Image 1: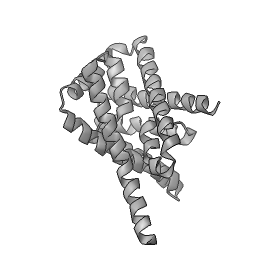
Image 2: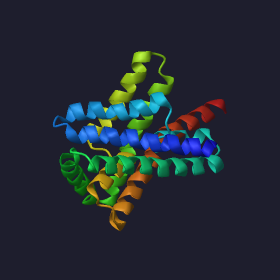
Image 3: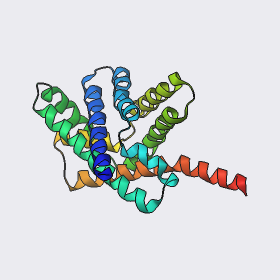
Length: 211
């Protein structure tokens, strides 16, 4: 039952991030779009949902044998949530506007190099983990939420690659192919490395200080 609960929370996280993607695409002003996109991560953090890009940052705090399957479960759940939102939007009057923007955004990603996608994915999750860490550990209530907003706005405005948001964009645009899957895996790998590098260095620092 715990696995089912984790899976449902992963689907919900994917759905909320995708909803943030819808808002971002509909806004003409990039700053406003980036600000409103943060509502997706805000919902994930405050409601305790399972988002792959956030959870991967705690890899070194858990047993890899049990945490790796958990992350895979979350990743699949996030995809289902993002895909479902894309299918829902396609059935509404919002579809033409969102589809046009999603197609343009997706094409930029598909035309990019794998190295660029990896590096942009890496940079993205530095900010996602920062945002999640601020929410979890900032002693000030205002700081918790500002951390989410600033972290999300930074990676959106910089054009960094968030794998779960990209799942929504690709699904909305209907561009899934072998090349798109490879691009998604490269972005995901970048998110993984970007998500574990700072916590890993922090663990290394703590270990050296104890020796």
